[in-house]
Length: 344
Image (cartoon, rainbow, N blue to C red; front, side):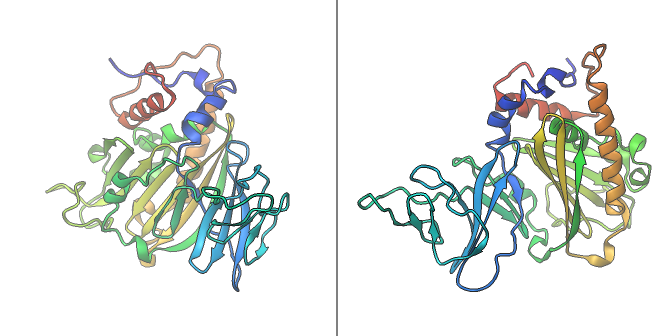
């Protein structure tokens, strides 16, 4: 039986706390390394996902290089670092507890020796210059995603600008749009000319999905290894390679490099998309499927916002999903598993 579109009730304010605890909190989120100054040590506090998680973290640079730590003191939770600046140790201003720059407990006034009271380092993984963190202590780097990107020159990719888009819609609506190519000829006329839409396909995976965009023979292609599992004999070049790490990491791989769409949930009616570029072949930027990306993002965001408006209709009932929307149905399955709703 064909799957149905999302029930608008899942997008409501009443459902938001459940999504935050079951979906947002365990996930990996994009984080950017700030300027950590020069000298012996430096600390820069920040809040991960204000309005959703409000998780206090701190970037620290010590002898071992940059690292990310919890910013909640292991005594009674007071913020350890309240302003960015040089430091040789981290000291809580409430009761004087001190930590080394690697998070190890150094001194605990009022207590004898304490074990297991270091500042925890949240799980983190990197893709070249991109870094992702989870506040779930049990989270593991996504081996499937990492293997799919194996062989790409991510280590030589350099940050190359970006922009933040504020979308007046629920994050699930933006994700649904990203996860299907069905809308491309109707919404993205420029992109449609660079892709063979008849050969467009989606691979569904336990950690998310991969969409493969095929172009015409001779077009610049994504530098995947010749034995990569997504290459098919006799098929045209892969000109766009779109990976989704459930739920908040969307990677667009092109011949010139990677554009990251970091999905930042703010509220049931607002999402920020942090668009960041990482380039390994500057001469190819601006060509083909990875050409005018700001225009494509603006087109997508407009569609998503109009969908959010339509879903407020009292007359609307969730329609059936097309066979050309497998990524959307898969998102619903992953979401249902995360929130414990087999009927989703």
